[in-house]
Length: 292
Ligand code: GRG
Image (cartoon, rainbow, N blue to C red; front, side, top):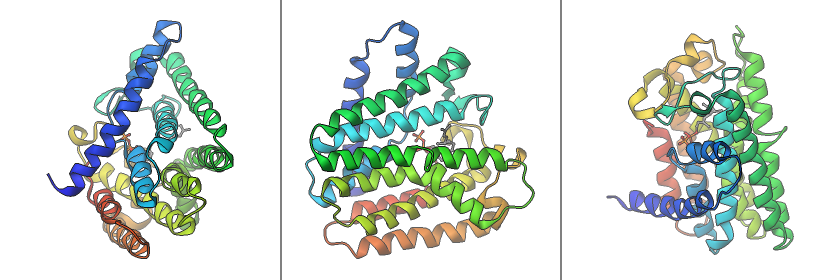
């Protein structure tokens, strides 16, 4: 295993412990509610947002314990967004992480409630952190804003409203990518900075915006070149459903060139920071080259 892989696994395992404890402690009624929450949370997934948050925390010298609840809240928000995105009225996807989507197992009504439940619980976790002082209030608010109507919801709304649009313009694509995808990645990276009194705030914000944009571009590339076996979800849907994507605007090769440039820009920003940024650089290359 490379150093990068060892570290990724270490961050992932630290997070899985917190998530398992959370799932084991769920005692809501009726049983189907707890089951549907656990089903989606424990389906797997890369946990890239928690991993990023813990890695940036290490770069800034932040005690890991201070971040674990933020990482949990963020993964709950991410999981809710995937459950709702898979619904028939949204992206209508029967598979997620290689398994039937939440609504295919529990029905649409229960899937909506599972998503709502995860979002509400994330807020409750963030509120609990607010008792620990002002930086925690700012960090919690940052995550909520990234997930909200000037963040992920705005991106998803713009994405829905642009479906089958013939003209793809760069400004709209930027808006969708930044909000739908990059905002939760920004939340992961900027939260530790806020908890450290704003250390490297603008650099980390710029890094995470580029990384989030890169993440969505590689998602578009994988929709053309990826496989169901590796990705665990349907591929080729963006093209057949006339989605507003980078492929439509730049073409496949154009997307790859843009993705290379973004990965380089991420690394360049990190080179301007003191401390060991090797893992985060490796993560930017992983996002560029990912196959899942
Ligand atoms: C429904 C409110 C609402 C928002 C949906 C996240 C999202 C917005 C839609 C999901 C569809 C999509 C392709 C989003 C962009 C890329 C993305 C977030 C992919 C999934 O994230 P990963 O790859 O998933 O981190 P895992 O399974 O690894 O956790």
